[in-house]
Image 1 (cartoon, rainbow, N blue to C red):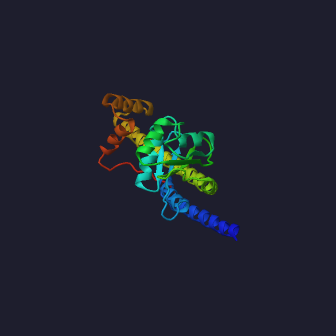
Image 2 (tube, rainbow, N blue to C red):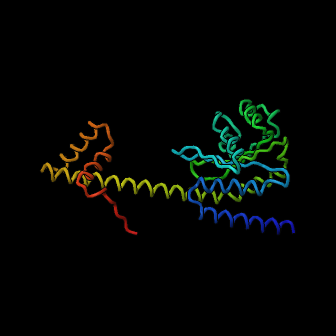
Image 3 (cartoon, rainbow, N blue to C red):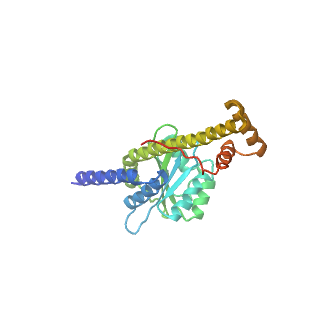
Length: 247
């Protein structure tokens, strides 16, 4: 009966996470929801576990999500030191357990910082992601030796269940950002092309000469090429340039 109950719980968590992936506005929104789901599933009545998630993507600022403001403040310590449980867990792809920060000598500066926040035990578990993306689930407790083997095993199973949903969320975020960057590039190119056309008509010059005039104006004014081009287009008094997309 226990295995059947666990199976139903696993299915429920997985279904809920898939809904979160579809309904979240961005990856940070999803991570905050995931941190709250983690806190609810891993805490016990009268014994709250604070949860946070750290995410590192290539060429992106580090992301910290949390189940509460206190958890977020503690999780930010992970990026204030060169060596921490989450960085170690993500790099080694293994769980890192700090039974009691008072006795742990692996990260003395980090341990002092979490102790100052009232935290005694820490558990960092890596998500299984793709490419250079690294993420870890961080569990904090104000009680020492909170994460006994039974809790550790349950937490590792939970991370295993949620890794697929996080991979999907990160992948969707990448596609969305790529599309947004492409749109911005096309819009910028449209404005520049229109400005070149206007300069060609006004100066009766070639396309290359018109583009050089635009570049010279950009350099002289110490302004971006796109901004100078937009000023040329707006000078006609017909409003800003619009880029139209099908679909």
